[in-house]
Length: 196
Image (cartoon, rainbow, N blue to C red; front, side, top):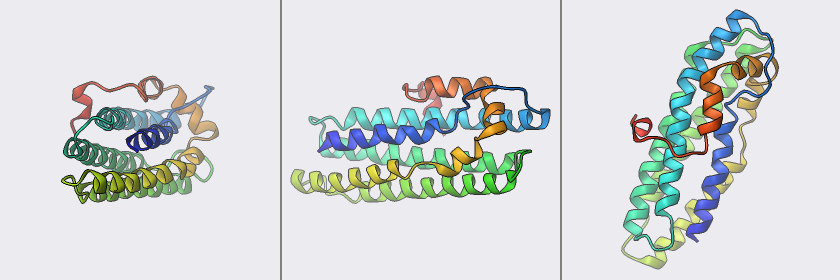
C-alpha cells in the first residue's frame, strides 16, 4: 500500500520536468530575457519538489510508523503546494512571452500551476486528517491519498507544455538554470533548496 504512494509520487515528477527546455535555436532577446527570468525562478522550486518527493518516498517504506509517514507526507505536500504556487507567481511576474498567443499561454500555465498547488494543499489536509493510532484505518486512508496522487500525476501539464512549445521552449533550453533543472529534477536536493 505504501508502495502505491511511492509509485504515485514518482509519476508526479513528470509534471516538474515539463518546465525544462529541449532543443535550442536562435531566439529573440526579449524572449531570452523572459526565459531567463522564468528559469531562474522555477529552478529552486523544481529542486524543492524533488526534495519533498524524496522525503515522502523515504518515509513511505513499509516499516515507518504511521505518525512518521503522516508527518513526512504533510510537510512534503505543503512544500510541493508552495513550490507550484511560487512557479505560478514567477510565470505571472515574468509577463507574457513574446510569441503568438503568449498572453493566453501564460495565463493558462499560471492557472494550471495554481490548480496543482491547490490540489497538493488538499492532499496535505487529507493526509493530516488520517488516523495514525489505528494502523488499518491509516493504511486505508493512505490508500485514498495515493489514489488522489495518482490521478493528479496523470492529469498532465498541458498548459505548461503549450507554453513551452516552439520559440519559448528553445529560449528556455538556452538557459543554464533550465538545463540544470532538468538534470537535478529527479535527484534529491540539498537541504538549503528545501527551505522556502
